[in-house]
Length: 80
Image (cartoon, rainbow, N blue to C red; front, top):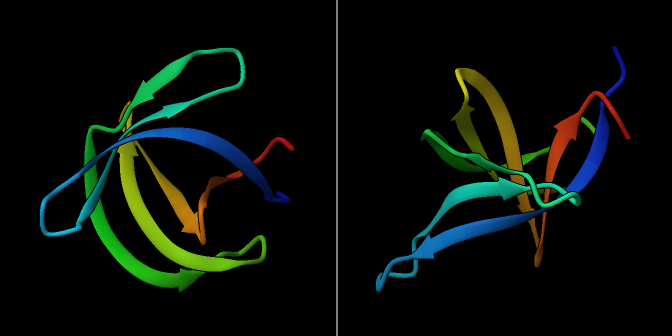
């Protein structure tokens, strides 16, 4: 199944140390999905192109990769 780069809005918490913790992913229609847990944060390339910080997250019981590429957030999505 083909993957696409889907840009999203993210609500996050930034600690005094500079560490970024994504809290919610927000779709264009305003729907928000709570990030239950960040499993890992590491610099990685995406399967859909581009690279940056990859946050491996649990969202509603599913593991998803969320990327911070320069100053934009995207997920690897099955829908464009």
